[in-house]
Image 1 (cartoon, rainbow, N blue to C red):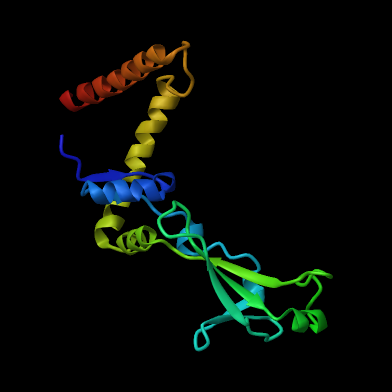
Image 2: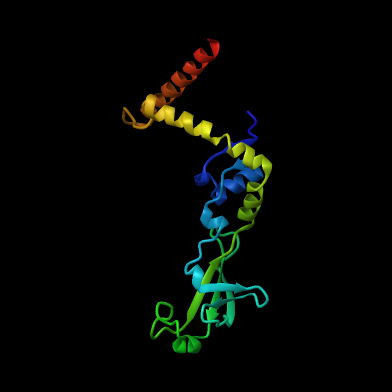
Length: 185
């Protein structure tokens, strides 16, 4: 059987699945988690990125003095850019409440970097092909719901893997048989 496209929800868009689909020439129609596409920055409203300097600026207007990249490429976790701020300015800052902790030796702000796989998937997510296929996902969800609620596939009726496999096969067989009978009418 030749598989061209896999349609799933955001749970299927993890990095390992993206790599697997790419190496096997399979199109993965699964939206990326919003924390990957939009970022998961803490205190977003307190720090702004200055494009000219390539550094973050706090809400008091103090620019980071140094940037360091954390993590290694290809280790399964995304790298982060950590921006270091001048602690002497933080000690005298008007906005230090909730930002600077008394006695702290440094002040940093970190932003995670998207991997190449996530960037490519985000670009694919904007294509017409992706949008068209993701509109068909509701059919899969409806069928899963029917299996769970009308045919008892939500809870195992026996213990053991063989019993679960048999229950799954019987539920799917009965749903397929119903569909065949409906199409024959």
